[in-house]
Image (cartoon, rainbow over all chains, first blue to last red; front, side, top):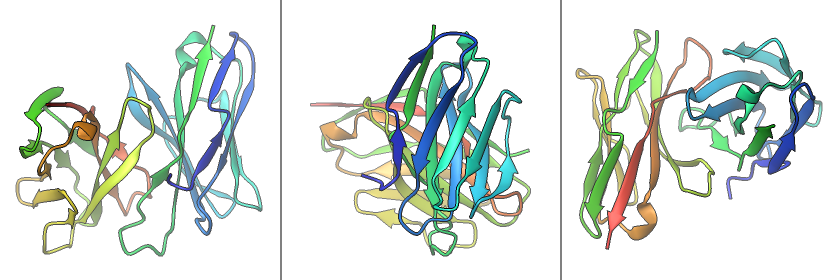
Length: 115
Length: 115
């Protein structure tokens, strides 16, 4: 158990809908990262937050947005869903003061299926 | 641009033998970190080992060691005394610290351990 929690574990929805994925980082970690894992694209970085502020952005679609709240949990919002958005979405967290180079610990993931 | 290459899509190893999973990276940033993660069939991403670009010695964590050859830009994972539970996908990843904390992943190597 990495200490990072994600809900829900599975999500099945229809095209055009909007969903929210939730992540709670490990206790004390200020950084939260979101990744998407799909068969054709592999593991792709979406976005990073640090202590409530957006720190870095990857190839995140405009239909996707995220935020980190004062209690440090984060949510990833996916809207106008398309079939191609079906993927495993991971949240990871890290401790910037870690001697092992800011190792990111991953949550169990949310498997999104868009029908 | 950063890039991680894992040239072995799949590998087999006999139980109790050692196995090396290859990883080459490409970055112009002098400050970077290299990671290996394990993804079993259940889907979670498990951190295995970390190597910093300035580390003089190869990293080791139990049965895992990282063969870091900086000049060749390679960071191979060595698993000693393979166990059936080592059967999984293995991902090499890199972070360039001057470009934020995002991880860039390779395509992965699927390792199968035979009894």
